[in-house]
Length: 315
Image (tube, rainbow, N blue to C red; front, side, top):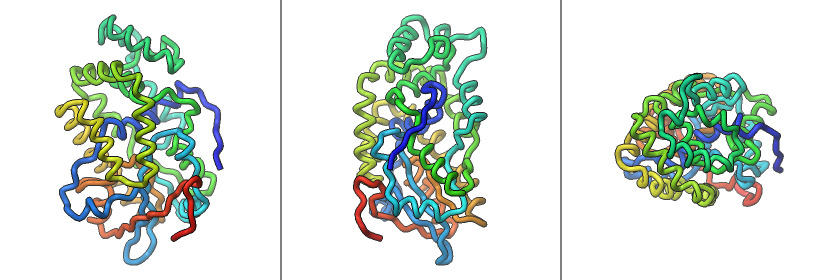
């Protein structure tokens, strides 16, 4: 079953764009533990501790593609069997309002004055497909401009993580965020300006291919193969250069995993938790899967397709 909710495209898209860019630009590390490459292929895992169910972990893709919104009944039963739904950040209205503030310069400072007339005109031309008011984009910060062009123009604003949170809330689960807005955005705010401008130039130059890249990511995601998704993501990371790639990995993956793991472990003390975070936060020695293992949790990969289009009877 699929359904859509109306939204202002420019108002809700920013938060979701941040999630998708992790899949487009922020790839996970080569896993240093040999056995992990064989085991950590799945996107969906059950969590146990002391032989007792503790919940599930799902690596998500921040996409509104209908194929990733068509959940099987078996999958939804697993979702409903929990007390808490934990996501990176709850996209409520106060958070979205603060996000908009973070994405923009204060009155009196403009994007054009920071990046130059020629670059701004190129960016504004590319942004015409997003139907965003010019006064909205004229004060965007370079990192926000780069992230916007790194994803296709939104059609519904109804992304996978939002869909899951609404289903969870409707089923009586408590919906919590694993990190604050400041924790999620700090590495973007602190990114060297030269790096922001370089990435913005790349986003402008490659804008015509953003739909193609997005579709490739969704195709890989639907294979339920995290290693394959990593390989495709690595192709994207290589294009941004070593300095930017290292910065994204250390600040956008590792640092955020620490914050999210701290919050998640607190939730797991007294609750069954369904965890839904960007897929590339899961693997690697510093990924959430191995962090949970180090705290005594047992994780079991679930190979059952969890979308209605590919659902078959099974475990």
